[in-house]
Image 1 (cartoon, rainbow, N blue to C red):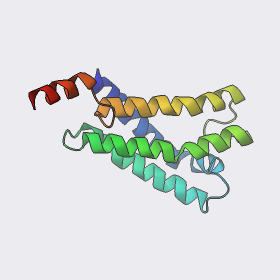
Image 2: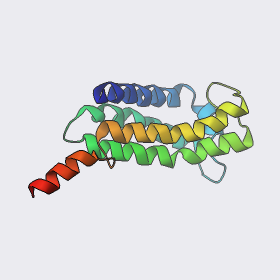
Image 3: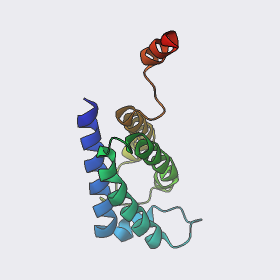
Length: 135
């Protein structure tokens, strides 16, 4: 099951990375106004998403990649909050306010899925107990 979730996460990041270039102006519209150079931010985050996505399949890197992806999802959260608060149309055009606000808690679901699928920071408690009893 974790392998399937990792595949979906990879596809999500790859599609998002490509979309950052196809719809750069739309993504730039949801960059909070206190950040300079919104189009550059969009391009850089697009490159980041394209580069990090396939690394989720490297077992020796998987946990660290998951942690980095989770931190990235937290880093882009201000754009989602800004879009919901300001009602700014972004990629995909106008979205109902309900969708914009629901996307914020869904970001945390995505973070949890990333950490679970990469075994980063969310640990299996039973394995910790077994290791401690062997000690």
